[in-house]
Image (cartoon, rainbow, N blue to C red):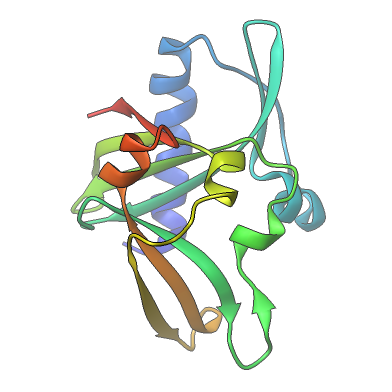
Length: 155
């Protein structure tokens, strides 16, 4: 299963199963690239307030959160960590073998921006079919929870 399929499945799970449980309502889905890079995937409403949420999904990963610092090293294209300037939360889901959701975390993006990065380690991914050489900082989710940057929404 490719990344696009995982993202579609994750969106479906959030919209139809998880968000209704928390009374999260979709106001709009960002469809143009500029809005998606700055704001994320969705504008949502919760208790008379509005938020921008970006959805990230992976499969078969340990309890870590990959923060994309550089999307492509040769072109010096920055990753989502620097581009999402108007995002409030990231909903991060991990799938078991790509078919069922194992867990979902809500990560406070503003708090994440001030994370000191003393925990975790760099990881490089060479994906020539996608973006090229990507640089991530891998952070243990338990650290983000301990520092009240993330909370578990579903497991």
